[in-house]
Amino acid sequence: MHRVLCMIAFLVAIIIPVASSWSQDQWKSMLPDGDGKDLTAQLCGTMCHNLQKTVVSRKTPQEWEKTVYDMIGRGAQIFPDEAEQIMKYLAKSFPPGKPAAQ
Image (cartoon, rainbow, N blue to C red; front, top):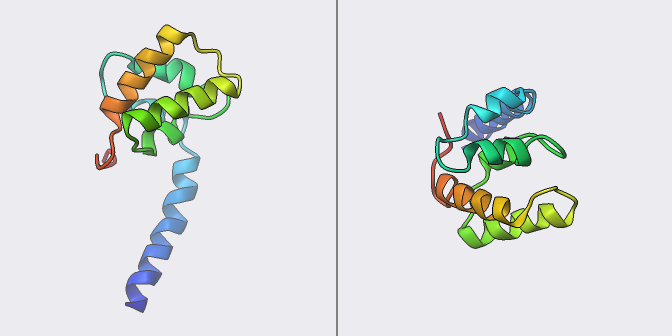
């Protein structure tokens, strides 16, 4: 048991710094194809944060809606029709239980 915990801690210590240093293009490449991909990449990964938060999250449609409107409340320049398209894309591409991209 102790050996397993040490291995997990070791892997986390290596993965997190490497993942946080990935470029925006690397995170963008992890977005699945679909309606709204380009809009999501453009509006959700350029101003306040990179696409890492988006790519690693798994949420219900209601949670994605809350997240998008939270970002708008914090100053994200997203029009209502864009928000709708982004929410649909995120809900389809990153639902709960979907494994992370390999």
